[in-house]
Amino acid sequence: MTVRELIHQSEAMLDEKDKDCNVAKVLFYHLANKEPHQLYLMMDEDVDEELYQAFQLGMKRYMAGEPIQYIKGKETFFSRDFTVNENVLIPRYETEELVENILYKIDDYFEDYESINLCDVGTGSGAIAISLALEEPKLNVTATDISKEALVVAKQNASDLNANVTFYQGDMLQPLIDHDIHVDIFVSNPPYIPSGQEIESVVKDNEPHVALFGGNDGLYFYRKIFADVKKVIKERALLAFEMGFDQRELMEEAIRHYFPDTPFEIIKDINGKDRMLFIYYHLKEEL
Image 1: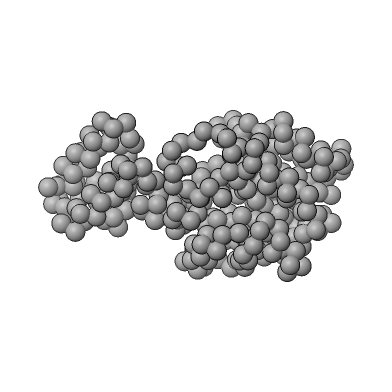
Image 2: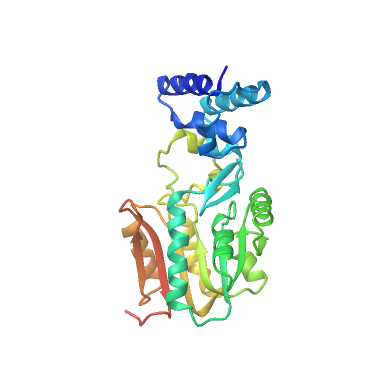
């Protein structure tokens, strides 16, 4: 069977089952260790038996509901390949926008700093912490996660991508408090899906629930952070979060409770949805 025949056959099966047809090409060029454009140069080649069996196994896993990113073991984030597995959340495009906006705000508020201390709480795969460490040499990056299994993945990614990040295992802010760490920039993409909300089965059945659900209204971890974060931030600090697109009202209420008179901003993502929260702690004049 040629590559073209195999992919065409698989695309037809995916289409029939209302699955993403692009998965066939993505899985094949990943298993063949080729770039996407190289796939088209090999369409008329015969498929090696070992590659054929690996492809069929991958397709079987995908049809059974497993995310393609876990099957590949990789996901691209900020133009870099990160290892992912069932112990970490799959990095999303929306989170790339958070990283991008943090980099802009470093230029706005910390341009004259020789070094900047930054932490990423609930780091998961390490995508945020590692990307920021690689993009901005002035950053001293610390990352935490409650999951030992997640930190194994994050440390592997830091090693593979040659990023200088210090990792600590523990619940939310506790590792920072224990190590007397104080930061100029506090970053977190905590779980923010309300516990009763219906989500896609491919997400619910595969990705770690500890990284998805944030209590009854989705803000449990934000309130936990807001209550204690002044213990780990410096006198002048930026706080940056990803948030649920439908949580603006609840979020504004929580911020005004924990940070009265502190300027903050909720920024929309490329799809026009409320997605990023920035709190300017003594960075701007008070409201």
